Length: 419
Image 1: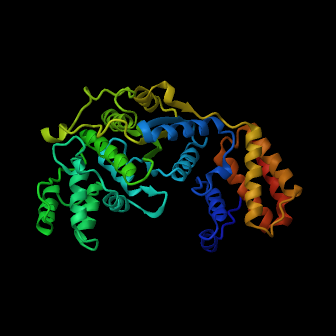
Image 2: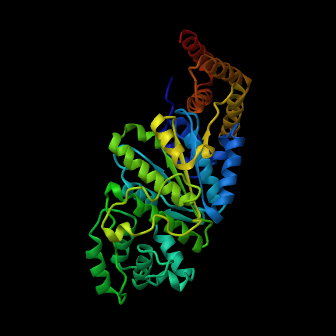
Image 3: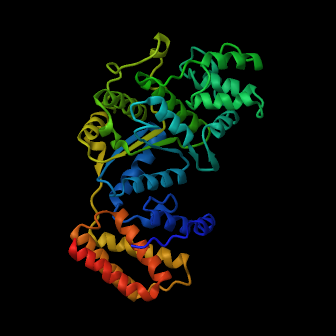
């Protein structure tokens, strides 16, 4: 099939039109970040679970695992969840796990990706800067800054004390932000010394943040603090979406054990110790005695929602089931042919709205429907991603080479018959 992209001009137009951004994503075979509801079919059960989880999160937190084969719509579901959460006033971060930069066995890298990807429902930009600024405007309780008080957070309390004392243009502010976001930088002791010299803040120690695999409990403690601060800053809480969690399967046995720790501490931070199946007493904790003394759960009933999406790898599914329980595992049901037909009609309507001069008549829709029917029936088009990519190819072909549509369809049908 021909690739009919005119990439540069189309990207410029897409920046001004959300429909164009959606269609461009479909052309590339990736999940659109814009308007996820526009392309959602047969997901009523999942939408109800999401609504239920988001209702629970501000009061006591929630967790969910979505399972499905490659291309069945897991990432699209996370996009939908992100959109719903942002609309309801949550901070959201989607952590895309991979083998190199964000392996699930390295807690600092997971946390760093979370902080870098943090998105706001009421502002552009990503990262912690806006949240830290809003926290200072929200009249945090005085106990939060009192060492020894249960509300004192051993990382965020000193950071906010220094943040408040620094001028907004001071380069040290950026260094402090990078440090609390888990980015590789100078040591905590060196940074603390420079902050003390620059400000009048005393008695606020910066504890180390290391990229050591046994340190997962520290980052569970940090994400709980983030969720609490998000709510104090006026948001509903924090939603963390773990995409590509199937990278469990690529880890060696030791790596899998450390990934279990990461997901265990995150799930427990979201669910609380009573609802989580993860044993905080038996779980490994790294660092010196002071680090091991920090509680993995910052406060009871943290406004944190963790959602994991993965394929049905036996190790990953078994590990997450042991953490959240069978009742919080949900398998995406494969779409039926009627669902694919409804999906195609949604794309056609979106295409009509975007290209008002393009007439998508029966001479295009009927053969397109025949190809999709035959492709799904024979298993050649086996998931939504493949179907959507083909439909876009067909629509672009009909718009740019209308006279050749018949020949194009005949060629595709021949390929399907011979497959």
